[in-house]
Length: 267
Image (tube, rainbow, N blue to C red; front, side):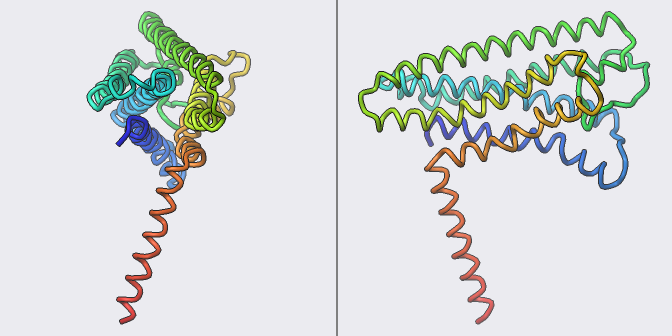
């Protein structure tokens, strides 16, 4: 019930949602030997993926602010990061994701699609849907929305970088080596998750057209849509002693419950 774990809960829910939006449908299509998805399903998948993906990035930005306050302003941490402030920031992150997804989804699917109905991807991805458009003005409008979103992402990334510059300056001034180690241990998982998230997303959206090919686009989309949500829990679990202790406790309790059940069945 601390701010960091409250935001980790939000991050875990968003990771689970991102995976559930794209991967089950792709696995079902692979098992049944089909690539079909309904128009309504494509709209829903696009909206949910953008919503969860945008909200996750915003939560990561909020988490960088949480680490900044915890390390650079520890005496004000209880005031700046109380339960009401945390709930407000989490709600703002989810609302930002919903607004971004609504704008892009409405703009994309309001365009007339006259160049077939085959999306060359394992999920409904906006850049692939734009290739099917035959309206130049609508296409340019959505490209404008994408540019604005990229600029907003870049601004948030600069905020994260500035926050960590201040954090590292404060940590390096700590006289106690144990304190520095503890501070770094709480920041490194978040920094690793942000780096993985940003590098895969930026490479997917800003790679040169000369490198573009159907197989490469498929790999890149898999990297930014599946790999970060899958690795985030692992990164936090490996680097966080409290999470490791909690998992160990859950495993020991499950073994105890199983042994007790087997004993009752045996009797």
